[in-house]
Length: 363
Image (tube, rainbow, N blue to C red):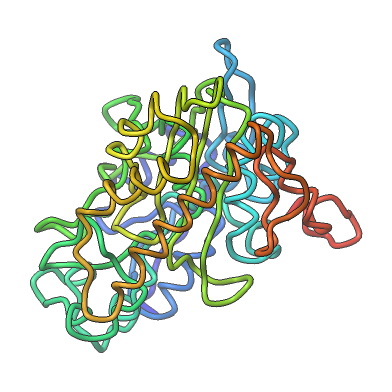
């Protein structure tokens, strides 16, 4: 591992100053991704600025009825927060679908959004990778790409973003607050992560020296929301495809819908075409299927990952149909995959979420 210096920031301004002084410095939160990549050699910062002790660990009500989530709020604490469970079940479900209880206890909100891809070629420093070494090539296109992108990729990169949390936040119209040398700014979550284009090394629009300080959730547009994740194992696995959905049905018709896909692209994929197509239509599986097909018609799968397109389509249809429910009522009981039923407390089916004996603080 490359030698590095370490400093613990005592304030947001001190953290920004400490990072801005070094071009190869990185912020350190929970370290669940960055430290692993440093061990592999895929990341080699010259300085770590520890922001884990900054006063950014609160979940607070906002004046408009939304929530402000501090950047250092732990994933397990956020999943178990009463306001999140009651008003944004899609967010709790997404968090509980990610990693393990131990990792959720360490991982932070800001760090989760900034985690790097799990592409094998990015993590293996013996292989070329445009994301790690711009201009070196993307062997994944012709190599191992079963888990990689089918939407929004480029000739330079076909990696996918691994966050479950980010997919839910995209569906909720969340906003990321940043603080940097030039002051504060707010970026919609859907614009925070980038598609690769010709610069795959840039995962986000964040500038060097900027620190994620919070995520803002607007008031919930509907009580019914859900997250569903398809993966190779029942737990501790990244999504082959995932769906976050928020649905408002009135009189059997779709009044409002928010839909985002995970595991398909370099960033959470907000399904705007599907949303526009669904509004005003009957809340039926036929309507949901047509809208999903419209959104996924832009997919460009590679040799070994074409299965992701029908997988994502079927996930979207199933989640939306469950949210619509028979006669407009969500079904009772957990889903076969273990996720909570739409509109129900997502932690109710996860004993570790409420059992203090597990030591997992809501994870």
